[in-house]
Image 1 (cartoon, helix red, strand yellow):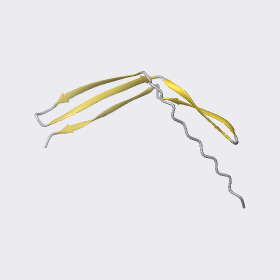
Image 2: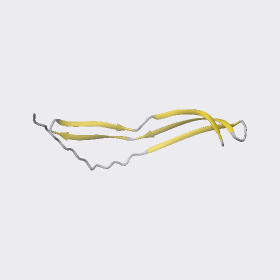
Image 3: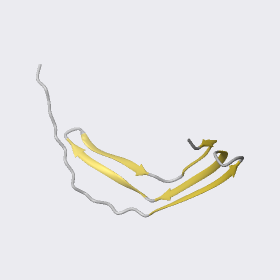
Image 4: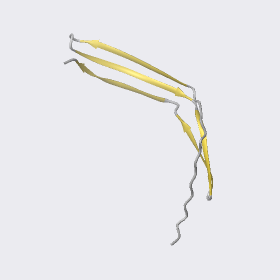
Length: 78
């Protein structure tokens, strides 16, 4: 059979605003061991990226907003 090949390239540059917040609490039980608890939050802007092809125009949203989480654990110094 015949194979249809379509190549799409783009050189669009985007400058995005972003902010990152990281809070951590550390509790030292001894000089070498302890516990930690932390959280982080990231806000950013996004953009729409599009490409046209033989099959039509395709767009998708690239969005880095609302990334958040928590971490906890035990620290130990060797």
